[in-house]
Image 1 (cartoon, one colour):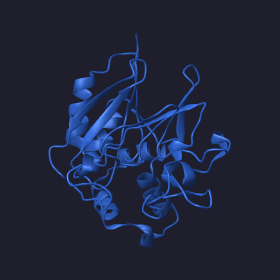
Image 2 (cartoon, one colour):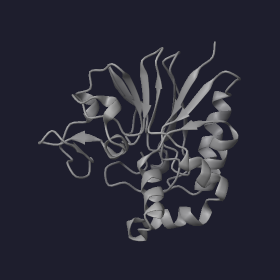
Image 3 (cartoon, helix red, strand yellow):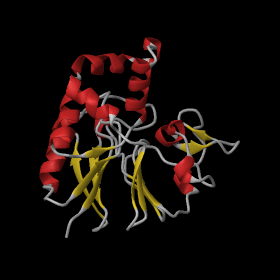
Image 4 (cartoon, helix red, strand yellow):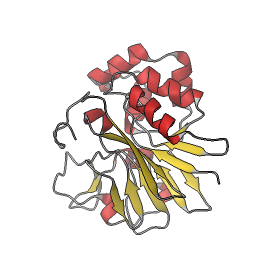
Amino acid sequence: MSRTIAIGDVHGCAEEFAELLQLLNPKSGDRVIQLGDLINRGPDSHGAVRIARENGIEAILGNHELRILTALREKRPEQLKEYDLTTLKQLEQDDWSYLESLPKFKYDGISETVFIHGGFLPGQPWMKQSIEVTTSIQVIDVNGQPAKRSDAPEAPAWADSWKGPPFVIYGHTPRPKVYKKKSSIGIDTGCVYGGYLTAYILEEKRYVQVRASRTYAHSNRLPNPV
């Protein structure tokens, strides 16, 4: 039976990405979906994108891809962070073509599952939510608005209020462990912070993980390493 495999935030951790794919050993007919943020923070953004391209992996637009692409399109270099500049030096033309093609989400109608980078604001039609929301939401603030965890550290996760359908598989919010709720699962387990790169096999409801070979970046929200 063919498999649907979701992979969390890679963040330039090409070595771990390759190791995870070797463990998964995708076969013809398997569908591999990477949940965005292939690039930035880690050591090898070009390598990460190249692996995705060469293995036919379906990636989704993450907030890191969105920011760097928007800054380039709108000629607003002041929007770029230091690690964006590092990524700019690494990426090649084929990498940019791949990133430009990334969709907002992937939807599987048979399983009623959405693959998204950040998530959704509960109570609103999910298909109509803006790219700014779907790539950046982590929590819901006191005003009921989508927010980043750093801006509202005591606010509840959006997934805590998400009832579905659809079932949502997402990344973006790094945690020490997979965040499983009845109608969603968050699989960003902080590889770039010394944690794990996680894959979730939908049909088997099973995780496959590889540990980061080292800590590449630091987070104010997570232990070091995760």
